[in-house]
Amino acid sequence: MKKNSVISQEEKKGSAAFQVFGFTNKIRRLSAHLELHKKDYSSQRGLRKILGKRQRLLAYFSKKNRVRYKELINQLNIREIKR
Image (cartoon, rainbow, N blue to C red):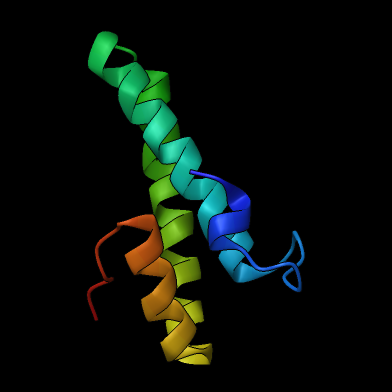
């Protein structure tokens, strides 16, 4: 997945959408790592921390811009947050 396909040119590195994209890539990479190394508890903890960060950021983003939030979760193929 390329950044250009998800993040527009106007959005900077500090934007919520860019950060969600980065966290999603880290989550996918760590998930693949944990499939091979099931007892890597440090990575499991890191994955849970990143999941929490992304969840909080998505909650913020859904309050600020609901339309862009819907587009983002569809493009990244992630589930909507629970309210």
